[in-house]
Image 1 (cartoon, rainbow, N blue to C red):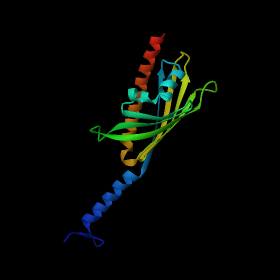
Image 2: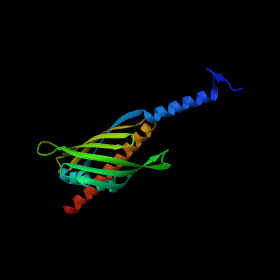
Image 3: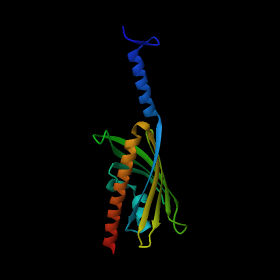
Image 4: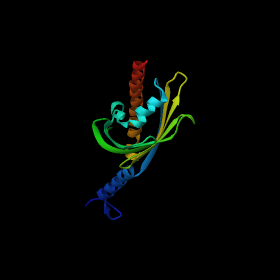
Length: 186
C-alpha cells in the first residue's frame, strides 16, 4: 500500500503541507512602502485641482485605471471608487479590482504645502498614502507621494513592482498634461 506518515498516506500529508503554504501566502499580509516625486510645470493649486478635486483624471494618467465613480466631492475631501485592471502572472492576465478611496486635504497654504492623506482599500488590500504639493521657486510644483500598501504575501513582490512603475508612469503623464496646459496659457 501507500507509504504512511504517522498512519496517514504520504500523499495526503504532502497535500496538507502544500495547502498550508498556499493558505499562508494568501492569508498572510505583507507590507511594503514606496516614495516617488515629480516636478511639474504648473502651480500647486492647478495640480491640486487636477489630482485631488478631479480624480477622474486618473483615467488619463494611471495605466491601470479603467473606470471611476466619484461619490462625494467637497473642498477638503473627495471619496471615489476606481476600477483598476491590474496585470498578474507577468502581465498575461488582468484582474479587475475595485478600489474604494478617500482623499483628505490635511493642510495647505499659507501654513505650508498642500498635504493630502489617502486611505484606500480593495478586497484584502489596504493602502495609506500622503501626497505633498510644494511650490518650487520657478512657479511650478514638486509632487511627492509616499505609500504604505498591505497586500497578500503571495502578490507582494509583483504588486510593489507594478505599484511603483504605474505610479511613476502616472506622475510623468500628469506632468506632461499639466505642463502643456500651462504652456498654452502663457
